[in-house]
Image (tube, rainbow, N blue to C red):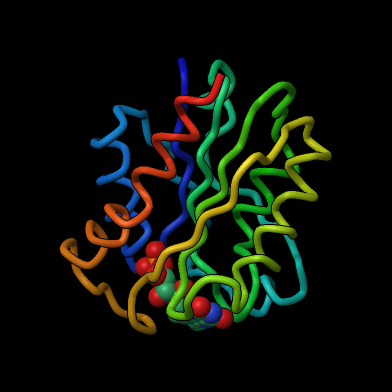
Length: 164
Ligand SMILES: Cc1cc2nc3c(=O)[nH]c(=O)nc-3n(C[C@H](O)[C@H](O)[C@H](O)COP(=O)(O)O)c2cc1C
């Protein structure tokens, strides 16, 4: 399996973006879900929460992983942290795609660095970070918005996939 997309989404903006990207590049999708709603306070405290089910087995055979996750309260998602903490990413090349209401660099570099630390501990290597604009606060901003955002970074994702 070449690449797998792993994503977390509470309000469906990341879901719409991930589904569209999966269709464009022909990659399988793995959704990380918690037991309840997202907890941004836990995110701020860098607490991890295990996602439900077994998302780990779905990435085992992939050489590359695209991690798509929203930014909540200037930080990453507890369930993404939980997934990464318990993953074996040995030899995997990882692309992190964050999204948020704010543009690139405001919080995306910080959040990507939080995930990179966990990915490297799990044996993986992050070779690219990308960011796109997500939905309005606690709203689904629609498929058209999500698709436009992915269209804006698609050539960079394709170039990453084409790397030897
Ligand atoms: C509680 C909460 C906190 C948020 N904090 C931030 C933030 O700090 N920075 C940012 O850029 N966007 C922030 N957002 C916007 C989300 O990142 C954006 O709406 C994202 O697309 C949500 O993804 P989802 O629909 O897949 O859950 C926040 C949204 C919520 C609901």
